[in-house]
Image 1 (cartoon, helix red, strand yellow):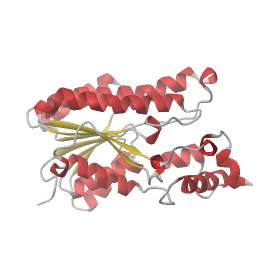
Image 2 (cartoon, one colour; image 1 turned 90 degrees about the vertical axis):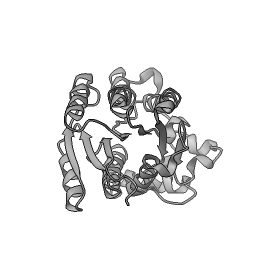
Image 3 (cartoon, rainbow, N blue to C red; image 1 turned 180 degrees about the vertical axis):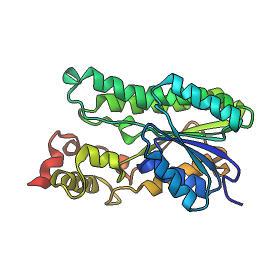
Length: 272
């Protein structure tokens, strides 16, 4: 029997990267995946899942909109009745500059999606999980544990996700609901391409070489590797784990961060 047979799993940010890989992995383990994204490309994720003979349905939802999430929850309540797994993965990122120069609109967008969106989706899904119990997995980041330069909004949002996860764990453990966060390092995703350039660009190559240098395993992570962790945390294999943040970063956070890694131009060294 598959690990998530007959489970209903909601995955946000499911159109690309970690969200897509996790949605596919959950479906392969027997879950009926409700793939959520603001982008219509989420239908491509569902097509991939169905092509494997697994079950999924696409939903276009802006997780920064309380009304849209409420409508989504109402549809689940009427058509399915419950949720077993929630993977809050949708997020945005942007390097906004030093704090006194950081654009307020950038800060607000990151907080609205990465933290408020996680809160809203969790708030709306919990009543659908309380009768049977289940597992919530929230995407934080190693940036939620050690701050990155010029990304104070992202650092703050991802740090907040970690403590919010602990709040879920202590408030809903008696309802049979577990909650854990994952803290990925640098994973090869379209978001990384957008922020740093692709592996074919000069700056993108430099960024990746620097990340490899910083990582004990000497490489970037793969979305599929994160998907396997999500499946583990969603399944009964992790039945006595809650309130935790699991790093999946190739060992980056094992370092006592040397000054060179924190210097604002250290990543440019591979351009020389």
